[in-house]
Image (cartoon, rainbow, N blue to C red):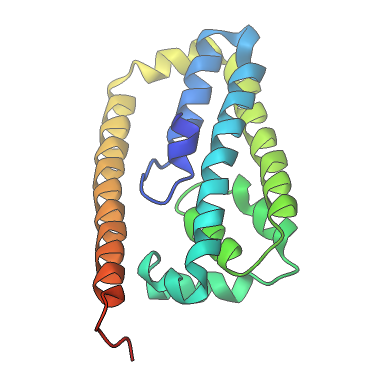
Length: 190
């Protein structure tokens, strides 16, 4: 479930799924492969929903969901032939604007199967590597996670996640509300 939220438009969980894979793999090393597979599955489901949302809103609707400065950067990189390179960017951790790339890829008409299968491959590789390293170095990781420094980092990430989610949810809400106002009968959209 967290993987789905991690790749969605509304929820903002920087490295959230990565931490879950690492913690679970450190605690139960023999199941690291399963955690990586579950994280990948959830991430692809969330990315697919985001991709289809981008497809539905189209290029003009992206401005309602993505900041204009970010959108311009992303649109320069996304072209119809870029499904594999763009999906391969799924390996890069935050602050890379992953959701903006997925939305723009959908709106730009990239091949969904090529995009999502490549994304699945790179996400699986990312989570497998994280899980395998966590399984191997589990005791050290768990000891570090009990430290005060780690607690502070988690609190900061948690505050960022809550703040980012609120900002994203408000942006989507305002976009939907604006769209409904513009679509009322008798109103001119020109």
